[in-house]
Image 1 (tube, one colour):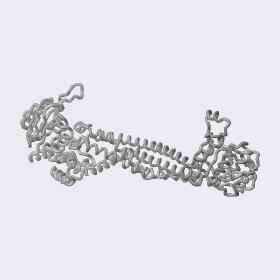
Image 2 (tube, chains in turn brown, purple):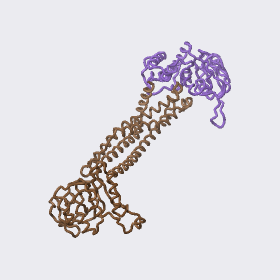
Image 3 (tube, chains in turn green, orange):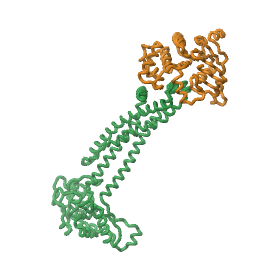
Image 4 (tube, rainbow over the protein chains, first blue to last red):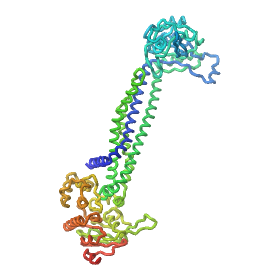
Length: 407
Length: 233
């Protein structure tokens, strides 16, 4: 009963200084709204990233060459320490049920008629479309025959095809890469940007053709391996590692990474992001709290005579403490409610903004989870209590005789 | 005996030189008395009011109130005594703004832990007693000075205090309203209420049946009001 009447008094006092109360609340409102918005954006970003990575395929294992230290290089001099096309062929022979795709990328300039285009030319094998879930929309991808005969066949990404041929079908046309003539045999479907890479800008040629005519050796950049049974990922990763080390005369110069690990690393990054963003938002909330403390100190000074009177007629210390604490908490409570509403609005507003500005209609929207709202709201109320405590203590400790005669 | 002061002193040591506000006061006040404490400013009458009202501690000496030795009690105990045994009436009324006459009178009852109904019944009874039965739901800033002081008296009487302690109760009022307030005091006194009133005005002190004169922190005279008025002439 007493609490209810104190709360009622608090509302009356706040409405008596409407502008001041609102300005004080603004700090809490902005704080709560930014906590909710930031968390929602990061949460949405995480969902989008995980989704993108899963699009790339989580059954994939990638084998890279490890950079050796000077010491190691001297130690292993003369030994077989490169990732070579032969490694891929050997893997394919040893693990026939896995998809083994060697890849090498070079910069190239494409020319046809009076149009040209510079970009990354990727040399790979016919299994690429299947294991990357990235298929040909028009024509065909190259086959083992193209590989075996070092044919100069070319598959264009959608954007590249548009740049070089406009709306015309490029199939059967000749394109020069550097000085060599290639025949366009296919155009890839549109995949858009996946994890920072625009798949529509890629051009594919048979890997053997690339090694023979461009790099002139058999070094490759990486091997992508498709493992049908995801549960066997760890086992097979280990087997492949051992197999390759053996092939490299016992030198451990390779690095294996699967998308699952990659996902884990990404999640860790996002977690860091969340902590940083949340931290910034909490600082805003903290500043709001200082605003509350400031205004409560003013209020206590203004109402010194009232405090003196209340004490004279029998208010105990805890009664005064509670009165001012409830007043500061009321500010943060109301501010918190408004902040939650604004935060949800801002998060959705942002989500739509991003979705519209993303190429190909990205689906990175803000994701609002109840825990975020609860955390933001309880922090706001906590801030009201913590920052209201000092002014309330000050009020409760006033000497009644002095307070009554305060001018 | 309601009040007993023995060798009571109050020394303020805030500045470089200690200030002797009260020196060796010995005083007895009985149930039902109407006492005026008179003195120039600086005579120590405000300090005496603070001590009698349990708002501050004496530096030395004894203060017995209604059989309790209150001089050395801790703050929380003094708060309880103020709530139950003392009713304050101030020169500047000290009503809470944005609260009705009723709510102001209910305040000491609320702090005493009375129920809502008790608070309301008692407040209505008291406001009727001071002649404000028609204005119970008016906000304090909608009332005239005299009416505000009457609300303050009703508030002071809320917990049936042993002493009604008034500090220049007519100081901020015109003479007519002042007289009305003093009439209420007379009426309460006749019903047996102990009243201690602090004033600098001998004519107002005349309304009491006993007058204690303070000067330089000492009691210099303690007589019936008629005698004081006579001596002043």
